[in-house]
Image 1 (cartoon, helix red, strand yellow):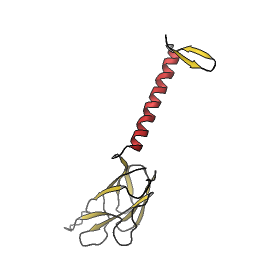
Image 2 (tube, one colour):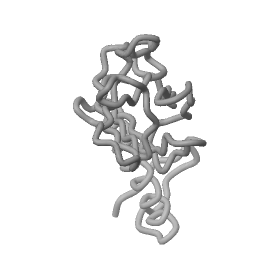
Image 3 (cartoon, helix red, strand yellow):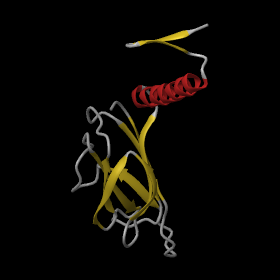
Image 4 (cartoon, rainbow, N blue to C red):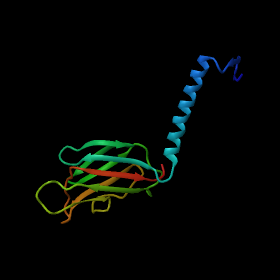
Length: 149
């Protein structure tokens, strides 16, 4: 028969109360372990966002995103809920062209267009631009980031 050691003595680990308690502890430890592994693993997406950048911007869904700032036509800043440890993380983004009848596609550019900053630990600048080089809002912008936090 197994026993749990407590400060006031020992209890039967096979009792229904202790089985329930042990199941709860195991579940919480498993959950904690998976969150720790996910937060520290290399190559795991640490944050992502899917948002509408036309008119009043709106986040459709996200993970580890504190919010988004509309800096003007085709210019946005993604603010991370948990900062990266440095600005050497990797970001990938894509954007959909507005249905305006134009043949110009839309590119999602990460902080490299004039007037934007580079990656920082707490935020990522995003610019959507048409092929002619002008900023353009996009109805679908998706971005994900991988790096150390």
